[in-house]
Amino acid sequence: MTEPSGVSEPDDTLVPLYVLVGGRTSPRNSNLDLATQVVALPVDTSRLEPEYQDIVDRCRTWKSIAEISAHLHRPLNITKLMVDVLVEQDALRIGTPAQHRITDYRLLETVLAGLKAL
Image (cartoon, rainbow, N blue to C red; front, side, top):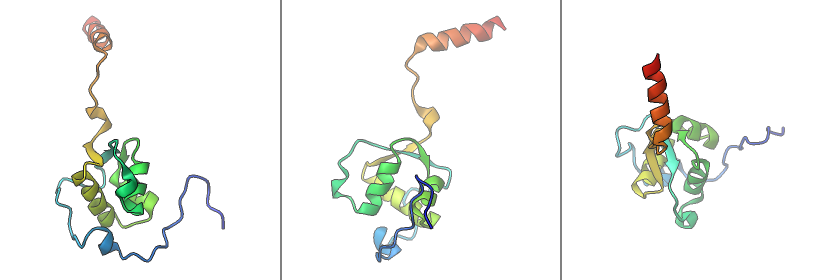
């Protein structure tokens, strides 16, 4: 059966999941959950394992850990551990898209003026 474009097939590698996460059983960052948003930082991914490269490539825009897990067809806990490893290696940044700084102060002033006019 052919899958729709954009949907990846499960990875059939023989690498045990615990090897991918270095034997870890829980993320060092206890704030990671399925809704945590991550985005890739500009890094050289050539030194990363292919499974980690895939995560970084998918996170060029903000993605939740749940989305990454679904795309990779991996258990959520393993995905959290892999994201944690990438955060420690400064390949991913944790946050939310709303945390981007707005640098167009004219837009903010216009919105503020509009609110004051109400």
